Image (cartoon, rainbow, N blue to C red):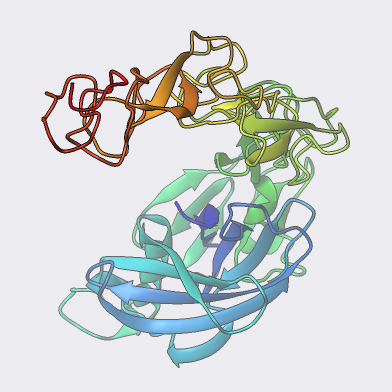
Length: 408
């Protein structure tokens, strides 16, 4: 799922004394932004498309809704009751499915919608197909709605229709229904049923007999808005509340105490708020020392972070404050010094490359240095042929072998 979590998509259809199909589908959702954060008390816009055939098929109906989310990011509306963009919801031929509901959201309340999901409409919306009964769109060899009408009659406690089906109605003691006039039809309307109130049969809204109940898997007294049933009585493991934001953790529920665990314990959309935080530093090389240039604040150490910022090279695990200093021209132990405490040698400059150095120009190093040598007895470092290993050449008036004598 992306940034809009569908809480439920349901349609309530009832048949009373006058059969008629409802023209809307109840819809509830939790709105989130691109970072997955719940949008609390924020104006949002939703575009709903009823798509035919496949999830990417033709949209036979499109409408938009605008509203404000509640304290838990929930928004409620009815599909079929929004601002119509195209198509006609009452004229959708549900028998020509399958159909999908495509949901798009603009979390700023505008019209720049982003797709957040497409879900197939299964059994519930197809109660709308019952409307075909009203128009006699059934295969009974005729299109005459009049021959679908049946007569309702009552004889004592027997309620019958003219096609022959009969039910026995309960009575009170010796009291029984003798005629249809024994039924109190005051206020009777579509979607009503007859309810025995203890002394008489009276019309009642069938929806009043049922309620939504929500799973409470973690037994914290708060229900999961994404796991609900429609029932006359409370099923085991379900409650009437639907405000839990994590039904798998009993320490997470509305107004729970916030603790340092990287969770939104109180379901307010914030994590570990009000607890303060610690600065942690990235430890890329895993040597236990952090990079002072790469840090983040958190209540618990994030993976790959440590609480110190003592590393001077976070890409090399051999360089840290506890590493031994070795002869490599690098500050291995992060003390600001290079190759300190290791054995040093004196190297002498060898300009003429004859392998003999000039004693007047030297450096200290623990490893060989280009252009320098360990010997220091060259008497002319600008002449390759003049050094202690060179042969003496008579008559050139030069001390070729650096022994202090000329043309010996």
